[in-house]
Image (cartoon, rainbow, N blue to C red; front, side, top):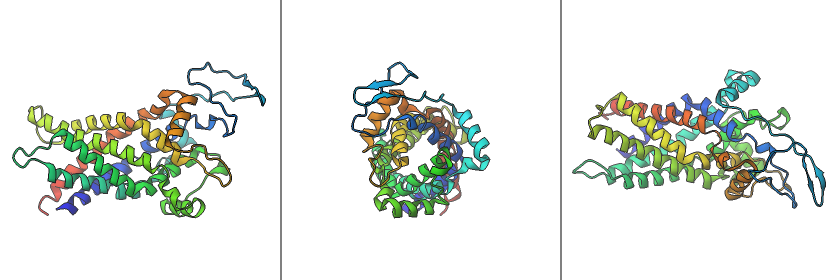
Length: 325
């Protein structure tokens, strides 16, 4: 019975992940906007305050003299980023890193969905057939954390493959597949690089799983209890969209930091751009403002909504098909 939950959740997650992959890719590109403007890592570095007035004239450092800062590029939106990717690299580029998405969903989502299902069965009141909201959240936190730890190598590979197209040709990593990405990272940067940003991945996954799975169950139960709709496609879609919105709001700040830490280039003998998650968050906020943590929110919600809908609608259909098994 427990294995069945893993299988059902895995199939639904892979279908949802592949169908919404282009939106996820656009989200990653938008989250990295402005990062190239960060000043080089030096002992005298000072970051421009988030609320300082922009200037194209540069500033004078007491020790280094006049330093010219390039004007910031204009922010571009969801459609603009998508069109730019298609114009530069073709429509197929929207599916860059899809092999990593499949592996990530196979490892991460299969684990979290199956584990959540097991905990749900154990913690559901047999008399009322309901599970309290706090227990749902706790189950989501546990399932998400374990799933993220298992799937982190695929997550790092996916972020890098999705971000590769924004780099100049000479700087691109040009991974051939998710397995090539993982093997190159292990060879060139050490096995530990496969778990780079793992604390962020785990924190994000705990937030997403707790907010997404728990809120879906809660919204669905509330709709059915109040008799607003019958248990069918309409209820599943409504509960899914609501759960997707909650998950996007809760996870976006951690997601931005995770994307930047995983994507950073660490070269031998050079100081890494970020020493860790907190350092990345502070530098991002100082250089780009606090709302930079919600970069890519429109594609996040645009992706999280459909992803959650496809995930749970597919899950409900797979459960119906496998009901007799």
